[in-house]
Length: 172
Image (cartoon, rainbow, N blue to C red; front, side, top):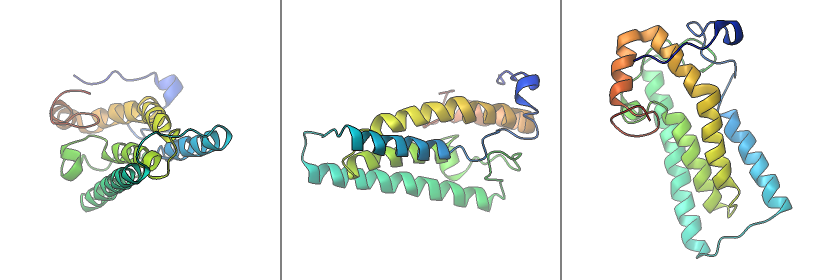
């Protein structure tokens, strides 16, 4: 089942370009800036071993950034357009895209959660969740309509076997 097409009056032609946002990962940058400001104005502390938290955070940060890089390399190898405000040139279903339809956004979310622990800024944790929700509403849903229009049944099959965020089945 394909996603419903949003009103073309309001959103333009999703068949030629999925997003008006030139680079949705900037949502994560904005969330980070707000969380750093919030921590400056109202510092919060976690009551746990800081060495453990920093190590766990650094590991999550590395995993998130590694996932971003792996996804970008995979897109490059498939000659897929990486700019989300331009039309998709290929439906990438290999590498990290076999496990997540949105590995770059997933990587950004994991990295921001890791940064929360690594840099002892608890405000970054809800910022990561809010950013992920904002990216879902402002970019991912539009990108999915665009991919359905561009790739038809190939998209439907991919969507049926790969989760939106992580996993091998369903529409999550």
